[in-house]
Every structure is written in C-alpha cells, then in structure tokens.
Length: 380
Image 1 (spheres, rainbow, N blue to C red):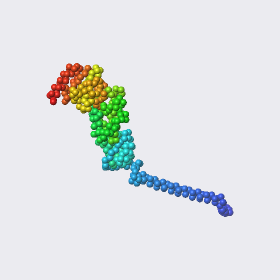
Image 2 (cartoon, rainbow, N blue to C red):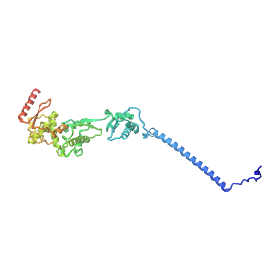
Image 3 (cartoon, helix red, strand yellow):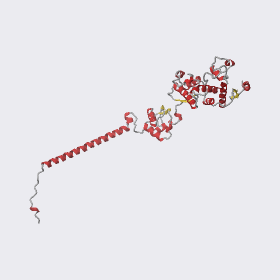
Image 4 (cartoon, rainbow, N blue to C red):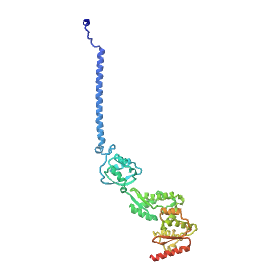
C-alpha cells in the first residue's frame, strides 16, 4: 500500500480574470467566423441566382427582349418563306455577310451563318452583288443559294461592236429603264465620268463594246463611266500612249464599220495607213454615212460630192474629225498590228457573205467593183 491517499486533496482554483477574457475572445472570434461563412454563403447563392437568370436571359434574348442573341447559333429549319433582295458588298467576310442576312431576315443568327460558312468549302467563292433570297432560311441553305447563279439579280447591258453613242444610249435606256435624260445629264460633265481630255468632249468611240453586269444601285453616270474605263483600260493594256488614243480609236472605228470578217481587219488597217501615208482620200462610205446621220452605209454620188459633210472622206483628206462607232478589241489590235502589204483599195464583192477583196492598183480594184455590180444584178 502506498501513501497516495495520504496527500491532501487538490483545491479547485477559481479562473483568473485573464482566463475569463480569453474565453470570451474565442467565443467572439467563433461567432465572427460563423457570420463570415453565412455572408459568403449568401453571396455565393446570390451569384448562382444572378448567373442562372443571366444564362436564361442570354439564351432567351430573342424572345424576351426582341433582338438576336449573339452568343447562340440559333438557326431556322426551313428553306425560306418570302422573297427578299440582299446586296453582298465587295470583300465581305462571312461575319459581315451574316450580319447583312440577319438584318434582312434571311438567317436567324450571325453565328449560325458563320458556322455554315466555315463548314462549306465553296462559301469563299460567294461573289459581291445583289441576290434574290428568301426570309427565314436555314443558314446552310442560304449559302447554297448565294453560290447559285440563279439567285443573282443581274441586269446585263450588252453593247455590240460598231454601235454609235446614240444606239448605245437607246440600248441602255431600254435595258435599265432609266430615262434618257439621266444619261444625257451624266454626259454633260465629261470630266466627272472620266472621259479623257484627248476625246475633246466627244463620247463617240469611247463607250467600249462589251457585256456589263449592272447592280441595282448603278446610276447612269456609273454605267457611262464604266464603259469609258473599259476603253482606257483596254488601250493601256495594249500599250497605247494617251496622245495616240484618239487616232487609234478613229482608225479602229473605220475598220469596225467596214470589215465583214476578222481576217480582213489587219489588211484594212494597212490599206488605211497606206492611203494616209500617200496623202490620198480614204473614200470610206461608212464615214460619209455617219456624217449624214445614217446608221447604214448606203450613200449616193451626191453624198460623195458634198464637202459640207466633215466626215466625207471622198472630199476631205486624212482621218475624219472623230470616231464613227465604238470599235472592239479585234479592230483596235488590227490598227496596232496591221498586216504587211501594199493594199490601198478594198471592196465587198458579196454583200451576203461579206467577202471582201483587196487590191494594190486601181485597175484591179475596178475588176472587183465589177464583181460587186454583177452580184447586185443577180441579187436585186
């Protein structure tokens, strides 16, 4: 047996003031921590509620707020409803096209169009221009239609070779439906539509013969300007200096109106050049008829003897005062590269086929003229 039980009992000491103060601090800190956790929980719950509402709002923006949701690639399901005209501007990206189509009511969202654009390897080939599409189209269907030639709202203005300004304007008025006065008003300011100074204010010969694809917003001034630009671009590409342009166009217009076959153009250009170099009158019926305001080439002996006509190449030496029509590329190239030869005459011996014979002497020329008269007798 030990003596542990003989020790006096341990006396319980009352807590000191410092101990009591520490306990209170711990309890207060615990309560503060609890309050912080509660506040954090409230904030988190609030963020969850706001985020959920925002997500709902974003995903239902179209129906709730009446505008296209930019974050969702919502798409129509059908192939379209009502016809609508849409213009795709030059250098438009897929996103730019999408915005244009959304504004026109063609596709439902920009994102849907961009996704369809990127998924179609041919989409990069969509050309600028005006298109006839449908409202409420599936984005992929809209791209297919944009790639289809049938959807293009194209107005084609075709200017054949050898037409005069008067004839070209008649065609432009007929095709575009624009009043003739609009074209005349545009042409009243040659500098504004790009007519070069060497033309001397005369549009004849400067409206290049070609087929032009017109846009709905093309003005009369735009159309005339494009024709002139095509002429200057063509001459520039062929290396014709500005100071030689008018002479080239005048000569080419004579070839254009007289030649019946492409093979005859370089020979005719040479014959014209030979006559000019020999100081001979050109004796070109088409020029005489132009000066008389006639569309054909039928002239009389009285017409040939009329010196009051400045385009009478029987009475006046040298080139006429201006072009007599719009020459095409082949006539221009013939003037720039005439076929070598000594020809100074030509005559069409068959007016049906346009067969033309060239000669170097007057005697030979008279024989060919006799062939023409015989043909005329046999084909009254």
